[in-house]
Image (cartoon, rainbow, N blue to C red; front, side, top):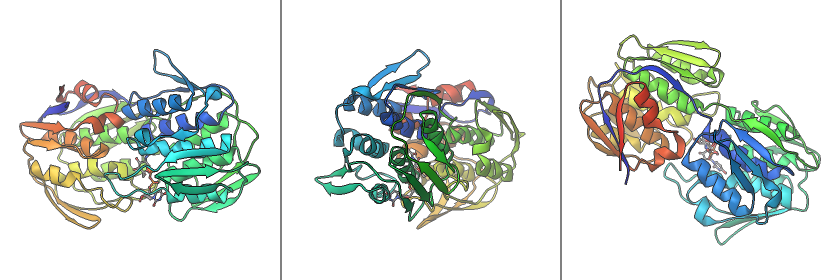
Length: 418
Ligand code: UD1
């Protein structure tokens, strides 16, 4: 099994190019199923989750072509199956995002329940309730969500809690529903805005994406189009935290600073100097040790849960004590035990972790438990004395494009071993 080995102590310096956002490209690839013509997606990150989604789309019958820049064109005209199997859905929860598009386009869909997930129970009830509001008849049988509807009908739907995935599934379905839909308490993440922009490029009529009230005027059909995926704000944030922890100075290029307000504010609080200029973000730590920062995760525009583990790594070596509250997922502190193997001082009580910064971490073998947890272990390894070996890095390849090459380009001593 592949591992990543990090030799701590290097100060990061230089420029790093940000890839397209994982959490935007996955729903966008699913949205292509709604079209009557080919849709081209550019700025696609080379990630394992993208490959899994492409595999799912081709199993449904879609034609897929990829060019040398990894732009992906999906031709949905050859789709002949409306069933997303357990084999694929179990490996990637985002596969459930084909449910809304298949149902809206073909009037029926069967999608496996995603099943357990390392970071909490993560049910799909909100997706189901939203589609039911649009008139779908849905049952859950033998581990599959079975949905039917002659043609979905626009309706007002209030999400009980803010959910990124449920908002996306219902938004995609509403695009082809008859009449007007109003989605209240919708998620406001930049990835929702990006999905809406792609749907609009395909002919959808959508207002209010990026606010908590999205209005969709359903259309009879969606045509082809081209869309460039928004830059990945979590990848951007991960590199910025890495630079801050090592006392370095880096610039992220091809980024979207306006999607990172909460993260940028927290990095400033930690003592970093930040400068945003167009699509570039420069962080300069001037060799200083970061100050501990309290963090409470919450839906956008508040602090993202996908940056919690990386900030915890920073707090492990920061000056002071930080209180970190995780309000989105019930079991998202699995990196704590691994960080403690590197010498971190962390106490967890329910949804709260108290992190007491130590002067120095020490390298050790550790195990990645989920995607962002893996990133936090690499960051900790960058500042730990000696060698840190991270096992189970397949999690990392699901969501970070070539992280060791990008960090290596900034001066980190990092390599992958097979
Ligand atoms: C997406 C992101 C993930 C991010 C998360 C929160 C993708 C592919 N993944 O996941 O990286 O961490 O948003 O920003 O975009 N919930 C229910 N019932 C449902 C759906 C969700 O109870 O039907 C709960 C979840 O358990 C969680 C909360 O709602 O506690 C928010 O989850 P949600 O926003 O849906 O996350 P995902 O869309 O799965």
